[in-house]
Image 1 (cartoon, helix red, strand yellow):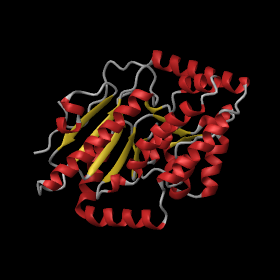
Image 2 (image 1 turned 180 degrees about the vertical axis):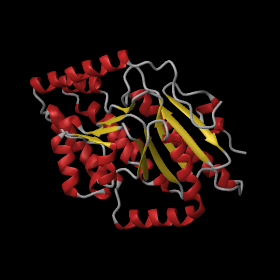
Image 3 (image 1 turned 180 degrees about the horizontal axis):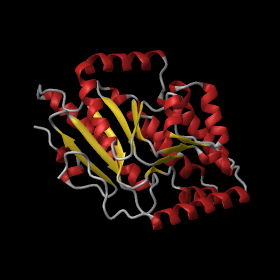
Length: 301
């Protein structure tokens, strides 16, 4: 029987990621706990990829044993109050840019794609990926949220791609995911304005599937799964058809990251100063936060 420990590397806990498995509904809940800032640092990206490999292994082993498919839903959330994720590791970016380290920038970008791409294509399995957004999803956090098949957001959540404010563009899937979920015009407007969007505005753009009151996000996911699983086979088949007709390919995402690296290396000192101010703002936000009581999923002790 599949248990939560099956999704851990060699049975040990992750440092920046929490995982829980619901065997009844075959749901894997996994939440981001990045430190020191709520961004996609290299350690978190590595743990996410390890976790994804474990999911793939669990599914494969169940198939070999002739057991029922063990995972039908994967829910991505955050344990940082008020924040889903603030995006890329800006401190790493600035260091690599100042060092003119194009390979380092590409390795980081590829690590992001290696995590987001499997999520966007449901691991090539008949399962549904869900993002539960209970706080701000900015930059790479925005990209991660909309990489899922379904996005459920609490009312106070904010979404934005601030990269243009320091003369850069998002390079880890934003355009690819936005243009397929909405349109090229919507994608370019969101990217090139850097505007902050409310959960309701995202719903109106069809980038979020449901908006609920603050504090009701986890229950909304549970309710969604209860309805969705009655026709889960049909939903999975329809998702495969959508990907067949209008696919986001790994090659496309990697090509865009190379454009992003080239653009990043053309940033000037004044642009890097803006990034450093943003890092300081993130640090102040973390200092104000009180993560002593992280969120617990519905049904957890």
